[in-house]
Image 1 (cartoon, rainbow, N blue to C red):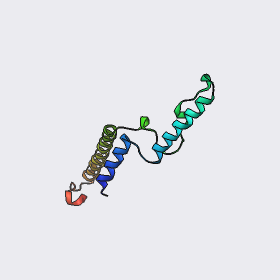
Image 2 (image 1 turned 180 degrees about the vertical axis):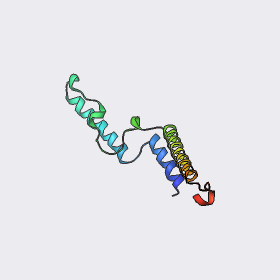
Image 3 (image 1 turned 90 degrees about the vertical axis):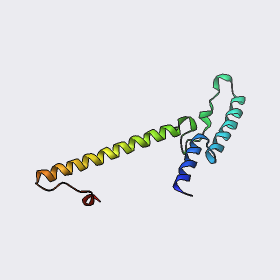
Length: 108
């Protein structure tokens, strides 16, 4: 599986969870129904009270692929800005010492 395929499956899972987590939600629904049938109306509990508290957050708490993309782009912009600032600082230090500016072959 390529890295791209893996990312696509991750994004699909964000939209339509499958596997053990999905099964936990189904089982929680059964537990909720059985419990709420056996107690008075004032003592009933919502589905969230019957979910296992392990693993990844539920679908409602997950980010959409668009949110993930925006966050990735923001992270990349911060990274690039930090690189540019570091190179500018190196250039200023080299100038202060009277050295020649960096050339691309010096950086790689």
